[in-house]
Length: 354
Ligand code: FES
Image (tube, helix red, strand yellow):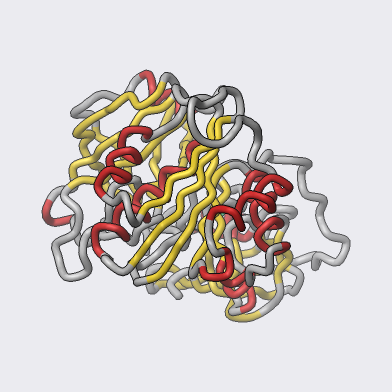
């Protein structure tokens, strides 16, 4: 069960003009709770003018060894989003010594170190979870290799440039690094331009044996991830080998209530071992119904992107407005995003503990 704890900020490092890395100290008694798998994220919470803001940020620091103690520190990358309420606060106001509400790690865009060849295609701040994945993998698994293809606007706007260069220095044979800048020519390397489906389709077979890659990790803006997925599928890569994490999706049009929604419906939810049944109000998501009665229900983005609100659908049927977080095998196994789910049957039962 995800929980928030107040963690002190140990460092605020400016990494580009518009991004910072925040490091949190984790007290010894909480380290087990913050044990994470490479690629997971943390939700941060801020209360401001009577409203609560939550945002998820990926952990960029390596994950601890399975048998070792949990992490003593956690580091996340935050890039400024235009008019972003949390990122503006993170870049301009957070200081060393402040305490922030930090949720325990969540997310399934992960890789447990294992031998083999892996690859990532990332755009902008999409490097953040992949940095944890690559550094943990290369440090811990001598039989693993990684091809990192990253796309940024300019060298100056590239997050974690030094950290990635250090990794390349430490593992020159096992880390293949390919950088494409969209708005700047490089002295060496690939010509500038966007990494779209067409370019990736031509580029990938020239870079690595596509069919021999055990896992592909796509992370960044929606357009890049979609283009990369289509390129990989076109090159014959099975969907099960492709892992995706999208950082931002425009809100889009408000969902239209479905004509077949029942006039009255209830949701029964189990959360942290306790259950309850509550009526669903007109048009609200099941997460909103549960939150009105159980404020400890897990969520972060409320936009179908982060996956924090994942729950198992025990019985009944739901309609999801959108889903950018769950893989096909998770929906196939009966999981839904509570923040995007609306009842189709009069009774719906969710289990957040499964
Ligand atoms: S809260 Fe992020 S997907 Fe539901």
